[in-house]
Image (tube, rainbow, N blue to C red):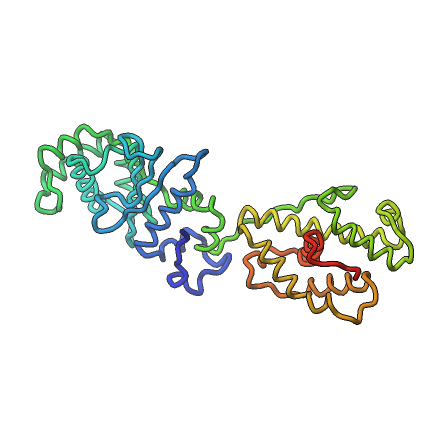
Length: 347
């Protein structure tokens, strides 16, 4: 589920205004937990890291904001614990050690098994001193257990024999800081969620090149164009003749370029905005329908050029693909509509 954070980001949610590393500072603690969950979910699937991801963060989360399992079951060494800490400053020992005390308490009473990794996720990362401690697991264990033994009145989970035993036997090398930059890079793998949260739209990339000769994928719209040419010429015109004709070859080449430009948009949409290219086709069809049906056009050639010109002037700002349109895209969608037999040039 995408994070609905527009109310937090307000007018700042504009492409290129602020980098994501700045925008995450504006998230609420609950939205930060949602963000961490989304970072885990992009690693979920048969060919990725996790089989199960669940945000648990609440007053009864037992010290695990997000639980990410490597398999269906919650078993020892078979899951990762993500602790999402949203503060105005970096996480240091004074805020992290009480969380560790809670963690070891719940390990000792069997709330959950030992995780493979314990990740600290904070938008301002950790303090330099905690950062250095995490790199030295034995020193981290020593500092934490000393703190725990001497601060019984300052933590909800004081050290007792059972929980202290778990802490002393625990491999503190399992504790890692997850830098915010790496979290943002991970989140960007889900381009749709990333664009929704940060307004950062993935680059579209290059369009497919136009083959020298039409493919089977072009058959229907090419046939309709040839019908329009033949009507105007007053005699049947083959594809070979049209491609070699000084009258029609450039026009046909332009139509094919438009088709493949829209094909590039279709492929971009399939990966980034599933279903939105089809929504765009519907919108374009509605926008050119009156022109297409106008009785003032006597030939298919006149109708085709009028509709393609009309399509190029349409405003489609409501579609999320609008920010990645090239000039030939909208006329190209008309050729795709012909391919789907929703448009005909010759009546």
